[in-house]
Image 1 (cartoon, rainbow, N blue to C red):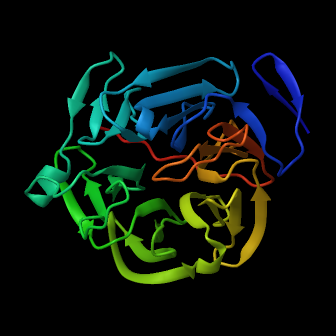
Image 2: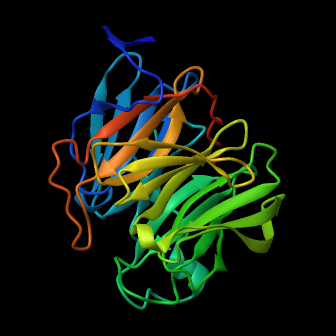
Length: 306
């Protein structure tokens, strides 16, 4: 397969990752495709307070610095971004203005009991933003899931008592919501309807003997789940009934997240990390961002209208 990125034509073997962006991320996370052709990809380097972007077509790239650790970046319909700063989220306008949206303080009625930040987040089918939390490796029952309203004016807590609220997405028919607890090694499944979740159950129990941890994820148009594995050097593809279909190896230990991009939404963008909380990967490609050409179409990301 020959793919054109910018002005270069590159031969790519399907289902074999190639390095796309060589900027090394301490904790690379949260890729998302933005724009009418889904060619402009944003992702974050959480602990280095950076938002990176690169265009699949023009090959232009850039970065945005934040004043705090930044855990996610999401598209807005006005051309701006929702930025997951530690005490945010913040609404970044096309003109560069930054407005703070309601956060954990408003949802929980009190300050965080220990240092915390947002973790993985996505815009949902009904326009809300669903936000997981992290406590930088410390144990607390405050780790869970929040939901910011579609108009950006109110936020509520939905779940508590998680180990690390991580990858999340919806089934193509929008009837199911998936959520990973990395520490518990579980993929939860919920029924989803009109912005509400119910009937929590376990979809996958991951093998603790592997010492590999499910991290970010995305769902394709056929309902399969693509899950990145921290300390696993891989992406694993599971069917909608949670059968393991494929394992794609990467030359980096800490594969952290993935998202479909490109005009046909068949290009999987995969972030990696050099390490965190005592973990370290000294391989040459650690922390770089990869592309993986697939044979399936992904789902377009939902966009925050506010």
